[in-house]
Image (spheres, one colour):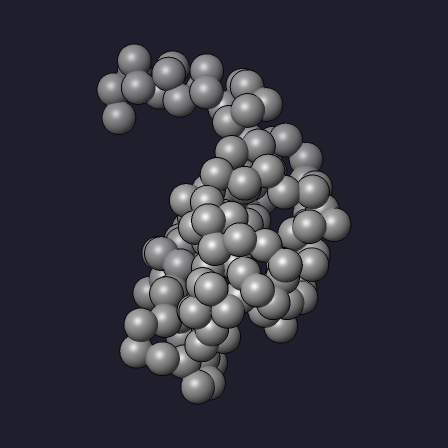
Length: 135
């Protein structure tokens, strides 16, 4: 990565809106994964949660502002739960490709062939040695 790109990325990370969008995107990806496992259609899920199908589509396009309350309700409607963590700023979060941790998790029981599998899994790492061990 060249110096200009590193600086640009650091500038983005310095803004709260970067972290807000990142959290919303991770939540939307996790909800979409649960949704795919559920076997419901978008219309069925929308009716179940009392929202429009357009809301569900906006959710999957990462265009919904979640409250903790709404995120919990959405996750629970798909037989999921929400886990929120706050970590020190200097704690690195490494995104590992699925194949780097797939062996640690059992396959999804009853998953359809079209099940969405997230491409990355957040993993907290404290230092370069943890990062090397995680890869």
